[in-house]
Image 1 (spheres, rainbow, N blue to C red):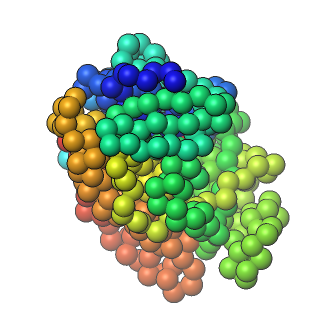
Image 2 (image 1 turned 45 degrees about the horizontal axis):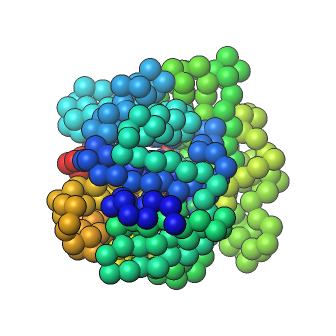
Length: 396
Ligand SMILES: Cc1cc2nc3c(=O)[nH]c(=O)nc-3n(C[C@H](O)[C@H](O)[C@H](O)COP(=O)(O)OP(=O)(O)OC[C@H]3O[C@@H](n4cnc5c(N)ncnc54)[C@H](O)[C@@H]3O)c2cc1C
């Protein structure tokens, strides 16, 4: 058995949540072992938005300095009606926003974010990183957890954190609540060189064109050199019960056919050969059993409509490290993990539920759309109350 006697923490999954957790634990003097199923650590090649709540956590983790040259500091979050191309409302992320939330709003390439966290992990002697380690099972003992992997290896730790994503094996063992819930929504993504983008009026803004059963997100990445594009549709086929084959490129084009020529033209920036079928889960407590708990998407997967799934995983990482540090090396690990879950459960639930509601608002049609547009027109760029609870974030 490798790593048998070391009082370390096992982290299953080396996505953003897993590596952020290893770094947060190291920052508080704790050893960990990250066990990732893929043959290499990595992330897909698209963008990610970081609310000010995540920025402050990443700053505490010490990675913002490396990340800042690659990040784009968002000036405004803008909503535009996709049927008219008219702006509905905006949140200014300028000085008032930064003062209020004590951090800026930034967007980064996923590989830059994950890469910065991973590089920081590689520099810490408290962290060991392993690839090609697919967790199959574990034994939760009184004072430790023994995890077993598909290649026959085993590792023992004082605790096991399942940061293994939407289809978490650790969740299956701890809660066993089945597959995640398909939302019936499908996303297409694409990153193109900024030179290729025809309408360059939104340089450093994060813009969402919203319309009936659809939205299109656009923002720049990598110091502004490339444009990230995300098109999402709520599938009619799914609603009709055609669950086998929904959300194909034909449906994407059909749902967007009511939008302005400008919006339809932007569909040229997303790839049609691959899509992401979106899922979340009904919030559910009880992610902690003995010395095992869940983190990030494994614990509280959400639709991306608040752009907060990864931000929540990063917050989780900071909170769990604090609870384990407070317990100390010989403390009650189970109590520390429970305290972590208690602190995170309703915040994660609020993100999941609010993301669904926001999805319904941005996808509205008919009279609901009229009312939405009317209410949005009454906001000012400094109206923050809707997202105050979220962006104010937590303290490390
Ligand atoms: C279209 C889209 C846009 C999004 N935009 C944003 C955004 O702007 N901002 C934001 O904050 N969030 C966003 N999200 C959400 C965000 O991508 C996720 O919430 C986040 O990546 C979750 O990180 P994680 O580490 O919990 O899980 P994952 O990234 O899924 O990582 C899990 C890791 O565990 C590994 N693994 C799985 N099973 C095992 C096993 N049995 N053994 C060992 N390893 C295993 C996997 O290989 C993977 O590396 C978006 C999501 C989507 C779909």
